[in-house]
Amino acid sequence: MLYAERVPKLWTETVQEHRAAVQDAVLDAVAALVAEHGLASVTMSQIAERTGIGRATLYKYFPDVEAVLSAWHERQITRHLAELTQVRDTATTGPYRQLQAVLEAYALRQHHHQNQHHGSELAALLHQGEHVARALRQLHALITGLTEEAAQAGQVRDDIPPGELASYCLHALTAASSLPSEQAARRLVTLTLAALTPPRCG
Image 1 (cartoon, rainbow, N blue to C red):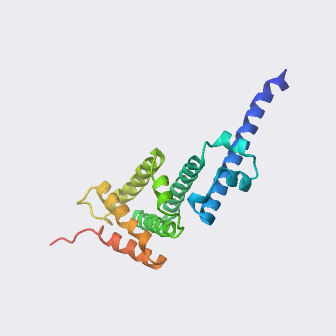
Image 2 (tube, one colour):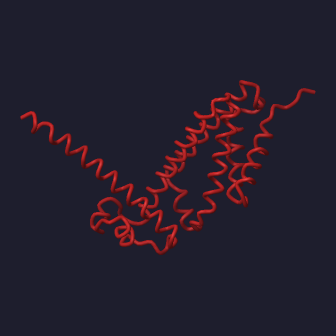
Image 3 (tube, rainbow, N blue to C red):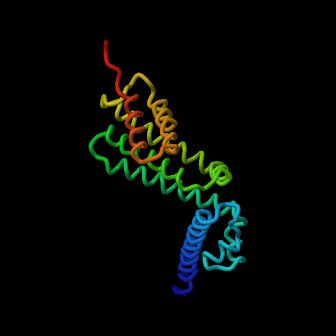
């Protein structure tokens, strides 16, 4: 009787782990196919073949290619936010250094993303949806918190609300996507931080 009671739980956990593994494999496959062939050339048959599963199985997870791409993009955003949070937690030399490290990581990510050559159609698809808006709110909250702490320490100007400074930083660093090198992206971070310097009295 005890064995019979445990089987459903173990079965459920096994099924959930299997589904998660299949979904990850599908998302990895579609990302590789888009990078190789572009969005217009990717089909569900190609995704199924690259993943090593049948088309019928693939359709149980995703209705079409757009759904797979959206899920992949959401996973990328989640990982990016986790990376930025880790950068903040690793830079333990004070709030300003944490802010600097996070902004640099964000700028380099913007620069790298531009060089993946996904194309305008894919970019338009990926940058819509609630998951993008939610991620932007979380990112803004992260930068706002760091800016507020740095302002309290006298390292960042306090005559402008931290939320406005965070918005400025994020908008300014989107320009990193059009810069030719990582060095240029880092210089943009330096320039952005200079605007946050506390104004001199007199």
